[in-house]
Image 1: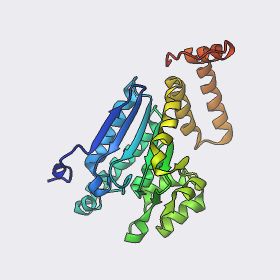
Image 2: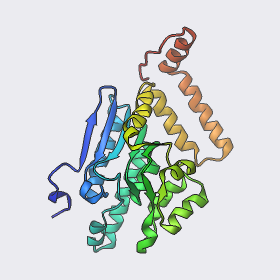
Image 3: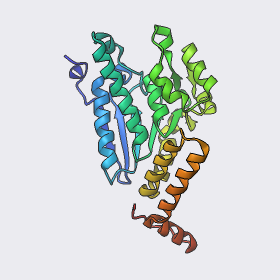
Image 4: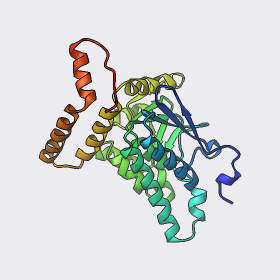
Amino acid sequence: MTVEAMESEPILLRRDRGNGIVHLTLNRPKSFNSLSSGLMAALQDEMDGIAEDPEARVVIIEGAGPGFCAGHDLKEVTSFETVEARRALMAQCCKLMLSVVHCPKPVIAKVHGVAAAAGCQLVASCDLAVAADEARFITPGVNIGLFCSTPMVALGRNVARKHAMEMLLTGEAMDAPTAHRFGLINRHVPAGELDDGVMRFAELIASKSSYTLRVGKEAFYRQMDMELEEAYKMASEVMVENMLAADAHEGMTAFVEKRKPVWRDQ
């Protein structure tokens, strides 16, 4: 019997707001929302659907219960007896994280409690992150003889090298103010203000042209690994293409006419 079969409620919850904001809640609170293969599959399905959903404009990923996400489900990991099974699990996780990065809709992590290992990786993979003041971020694999190698990829692309290595080599928890200072999260707020802190970003982003956001997000991640001249060349072409879009014309016209733009999302 799978770990999900023993759980009475859905392991992933979805709630849609009327303004295009989609909430995805990891719902395995008894295991601190650890990323079992079943939970990752459910989250993958939702991310794939949201990518094609014209009504969805912003995604918020959060966790039920006392924490955001404890990382991989170690009971499940240790139950896999073959190399192939463990490779498949890692491939599934990597595909999920890439889906978050490549999703044409901005994705925001809403963090409370602990974000550990692959949970910390999920935070780092999101475009934005807002955390409660009491939140903690940790890549503790080194403490159990299992270096956080896949979380390392996302972490190392968000914070400076020595800060990433500090987390990876020591396995010690980082508090929210330090995570903000290191660049892992955008904001930290009192726990009672977490909803408002996240919704401020979500509502602001949802008010923009989804076409413009899609083009911009894709270009941002493409240029990250390019040489400077190549990045400017690519970004210039994206800019020209964006200039020809209906929403760019509407936005510039609305600015000149001192009115609110009406987006066509194209």
